[in-house]
Image 1: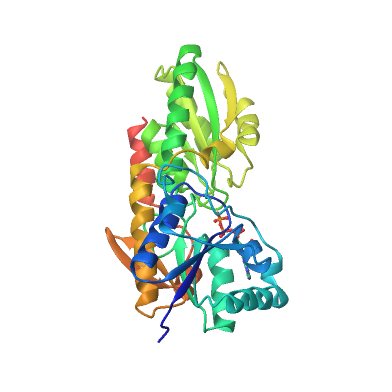
Image 2: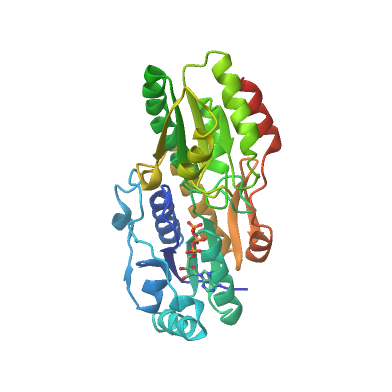
Length: 328
Ligand code: ATP
């Protein structure tokens, strides 16, 4: 069993609101339990470059409300190589670090698992931090709730102007491989159609749907497009539709990176605090190569192996059907 004394924490991959509350929780839970804590800057890049610093309870004061991550994040190619992983290992060893918490998405966990299999004397724990909500083993990932709230605030504003001008808006939201934000935002904003990467978009059905809305005197229409739709982005789909739907003034909005920013919602602050707390306690209990998640409002540990092999987001057909019925 791993008995740990010095723990390092990093954030990696795309940033997500809620990472800071999680870092705060990890630092304070570890210190409460008599562990030393080291922060690593810019994810695996900082691990390889030995860019680390000791963290105390006050180093995480007043960060609960901050979006982004105070540790910074990066995508790091060298960590994908054996040489890069060896340098990372040596840097941890020389500082006496025996446990690592990695907050990120599936790429981050793939790197962490590979590292931990090679160097099992460093205990590794994953925390799901990605706005995409696409990790197996946790109903919610850090940042998804905040990002969805940011999206619906933006769409509500667009709906005002769409309604005033009788316009059809195509709004592109984040989610290359995951329609999680698009689906929740679509339900929340009463979108006329929601296009997801998990489901082939039938353009003819979409056009029928929009024409039917026109005939029922809908004064505006919103179509939400997840960026990973097979037909391309919102501009591509708008062009396809424009040819066949007359009398509509069509506009396109790409929400882009504003979806990643902003102060974490209460849900993400609590989730980050709970997952950070659970991650440290799991490491103290001797667990490694696992991910902490939340299922049915309880903390659950899943092996990284399982989290990665089953990672794909399952399309919630029941929610899709409901969204269709409610937008008639
Ligand atoms: P998001 O879901 O927000 O994109 P992510 O964690 O999936 O987050 P990635 O860029 O895919 O983001 O991965 C983060 C980092 O994890 C990579 O930059 C790389 O350093 C490391 N990583 C990913 N895959 C591997 C791998 N096969 N081996 C080693 N390291 C990896």
